View 1 (spheres, rainbow, N blue to C red):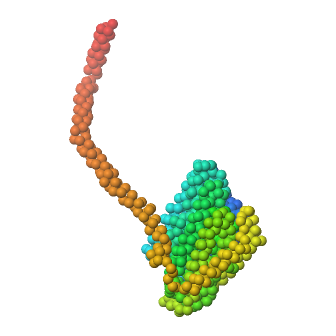
View 2 (cartoon, rainbow, N blue to C red):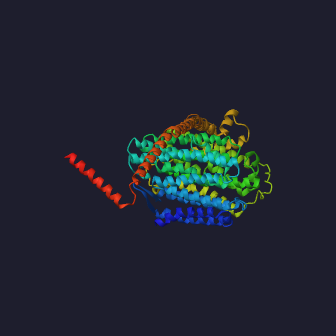
View 3 (cartoon, rainbow, N blue to C red):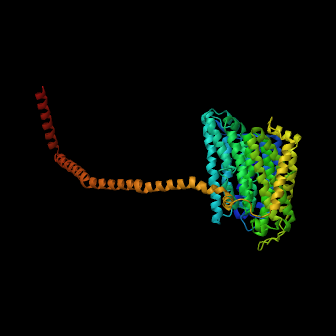
Length: 618
């Protein structure tokens, strides 16, 4: 059944390449082709999840391009293909015929194919290849409107930030070769010390960068410059969760390092809390959802650190449905109303009840309100945090409370009774097309139905599918505590409305500016590197260039001296030798008269001389 796996990853990659090569000539067929490929991907993903095929291709000695579908990757490929298909269907209505549709849908399919290789990779070479393609295609999607310099710079910031963290995977690969000469992901925990610590550090750094965790979170703010379907795909079930997925996949490595689990868990819960506060401070809905993505993925990273693979996986799946739904509705409103500003989105939910209901489901799920799926999934991973450390559990509950704050705050604005102002020339605010309504309905249903995954019989089946056992299970009082906390915070935020919070304005501005993370990175990394580059350029100009110029001038002077003195003497010697040779030649020609008696006389004289010599020698 390996052909199913090759088809699963190859179909979107090949289709994406063909659409990109087709250019504007393929714009007309690109939307339908992309949706058909995505639908076929769902069938292949479900087949692969049941058959669990493996595929290997030789690369070089000691390393192979390995792919496999097991319990964890099986759930992931189904989630990725399903969410991608719904987002591509929505994109057929959101990306107009006047835009470069072939390029958009082609790069989207390339991105999906790279993500599918990422989640099925069994060796570091295959993971690295897909990781790089995923980063490159994300840059192309974020900067889709490349003619706008602001969007181009935003794509560059996102790419360079994640690319810097990606170097950790190369560090991990090098350390794995040095410590065990094995690049299989399943064997990374067997690498000899001290190389094991370098492998763990590299994997953690790459995962935190890709998942926009502290201190890399700011790049996700810049990524919001891309089209809304891009935000929905990248930040729900694909790129941004790839790092959390990698940490869950390499859980034994984190445990074997002795420090990786604790570091990962605390970074995850810190991101969940801090970026939740960033989301609370936002006035732009897409920025709020971006910070929310960092915070919600922080819970997955927390689960990876505490060894709660079931909780992290359930959180990942539930978040994929809720967050992609929230981004799609935001894109719907942006197209209809021409704004992402919360204060200008008053009444948006009332003007389009279908979109409003879908956003309500997404927001309440993100808030952790029962009985929606993220409420239940979060309690499963928090049970693992409680077993690991009560302090982690308390921090996780605080982060969950912050989740309710930003989610209900966004909900309060869109349901306020204020008439929205349609964008000039845009479609009617209340009209929802079939291409938009189907994703809204399916994702809303998923945000509700996925709660059944937490029920004990289903949860145990998920644990068996993932091949884990002995994980901490949430008790009824834990569900009650988190549910009551979410409802209490939600009620308080709804009652508080838009009145200023009891926080100093500088703190609010600091949070709204994403904690100054980008400015700090520029101060700590970018400016020193630029200053070093300037100094090296100055050294090149003042020292190296002058040295080269001086050497060139000295060489020219030496050549002039050689030309005027040495070469003149050599020329004289050569000309004197030639003159002597000519004189000898003239002397040698004189006996050559052509008369026989002279030749005979010369022979007699020569033999006479020879005889005299012989007599004298004896």
